[in-house]
Length: 318
Image 1 (tube, rainbow, N blue to C red):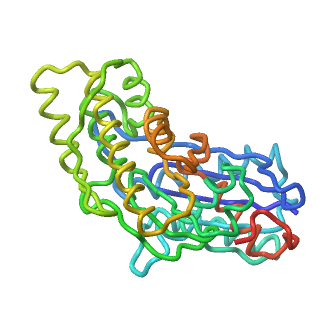
Image 2: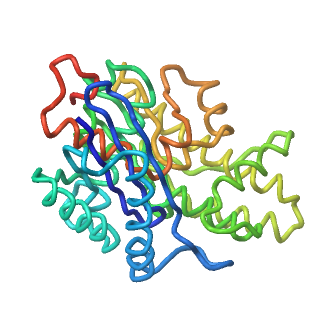
């Protein structure tokens, strides 16, 4: 059976198809929402418009690769996080599309959340089946979330900590736009940061499993005003986040020893962050950027699991 996943986040329109029998991703596609030069995000009304335009075109392209007539189940992200009050209008576009396809196919649509999709995609890409059965510490760090989660599979048991002000992805994007890059700027900041070869010593703010990231933007702004090279500012920005993550992992493992750490979200696709953290902590899983950034792969995996077509030994069972 083939399962379609749809995710309409505040950053990208994403589709993915999973084959339940082979337990593999058949295809996936993503289109970033356009942001005007110099701006640092989109209004929800604009995001809804762009998703509405993109989805029919992307489904038509997908249909040439995998006929929609072969889809047996449809999953979609209905809101950002699995908590009361979590809501963004942009997810209604994916919901309407998924429910329409499910109705036409005579199957039940499966609703999940954007955050759980991130978790499921990261667990899949880690290629460790045991992670789906045990408790893990999952970092979800992106443009709209900076949280440390205790999970079992894609089920989020509790929020352990996170940023008390600015999200990590927000900070990276703001610094990136200040450096002249288009929004979202993460990939450009990451590439530029690799060009700086000298060490930096960021002053981070971490208390237990919580952090503050507003100081990061202020420190980078001060560096630019003092004439610091753009490469150094980019390197400092990502090093600040890497050291923050490392300290939070250390505190989490004191409270929850023996749990592996899985890193999800677009910010976690940075090679600099991965190399810094993995040099000092073992049993930490970073996954390729395709599975870290916003995507519908995890949504499709969750839908496949929820419709109950996996066998008892399936690596995707939570």
